[in-house]
Image (cartoon, rainbow, N blue to C red; front, side, top):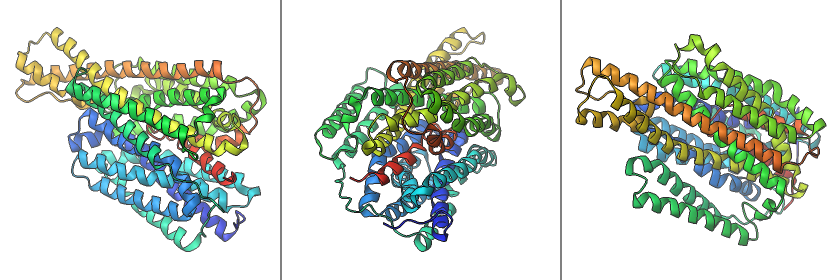
Length: 552
């Protein structure tokens, strides 16, 4: 299989094509978090609907991302990459045109299918097309450029939402995707693994996708139907059974998408557990922070997007340096201190109550954002390195792929469980405050107020109330959401701190075998996106690299 120098014409076109499509995916995910309040208002979506918008994409991505690299090996990396980009831009167009939130959720599934083929294909194509001696430089360039571009995602999303153009975050993918397809079709040669004949794990894909979907349905419908509802428990039990079936399938297949023998390694199991809890806490915390800023604190969506810039800057400035320190002193210190610091940042954020808006950002939200950013900056490179070095080189690509899938699964669980808890907490806080209101409401009025709990921070006083009562109810809604925000962020902090405890007991103190500094190139920028759903997209790059250098 032919490779090319990075400075050659073909090498530059390959790098350009991989950067464009990756930036498209990262901008889409980071901008979406910021425009969720505008989307909720425009489509009259409930709080549960918002979590479905996120989970519809994530659960498909989690189920299929490990298969995406295998398809590239069998059918050609460029071909599968182009198919993924095409599906992604078709899905993006459909999302932009969605007439209601239910269509949007369905079209996000289509986006997830495209992303599962496109995201692992990006660095897979890059690493297999560039000369071995320049691959590190190529991946570093890819990471640096996509990180800088991705920094604009929250800002772009906020600007579009404030202008009433939130659908533009989906439409912007179309010209970027078409330009990438044109480059690939005309300038980039095909790349295929010689003799690759890995059987696709279709039963495993179906089991994990349906299992995650059943669990999401059960948790997100629980506030509306009640915890004792038969359909809710049936869905949750079905989800657990299907995930059990997935484990059974993976244990029996000759070529599974998630080799279970890797989990016999104590460090590998521990680091993946750390990844699950840390990224579940990160995703939930940043999502509810975004909602709180816009729906309660009075930030515009552009200002909300700008609040995440310190997090991104810390990731860019510190991650590679942290990787170098981990090479010298070992990863364990960083995989304990990093998640602990991130948890402390989330805990600080959880105590921010009602503020006077953006002018108080520096003394209210910024300290917690800095703590969270520092914690993640010191974690991502040692985490990637420990995953890769905990198994033999022969299995490094698969190990990284499993870890990448774990971040997606963490996002699915965080959105489903915290989404359900948020509505339940909000209804409870709202009921308590209504009972203590000085201005009495009739039982019918109280019930109408409580119905709005499903909308979380977008709740509005029902029609028929006097101006004074409507103002009082609006204040109660804000106070109740702040209570929910604090509870969710404290739970998120607890998950991050649990990750630190796992790092303490499961990660060995010796130095990792691979370079954490190099690992930072493939992960720091993508964690810096601040996306609740895609915080660890960068590890897909490690997956691709491992898949391309490992002969099956």
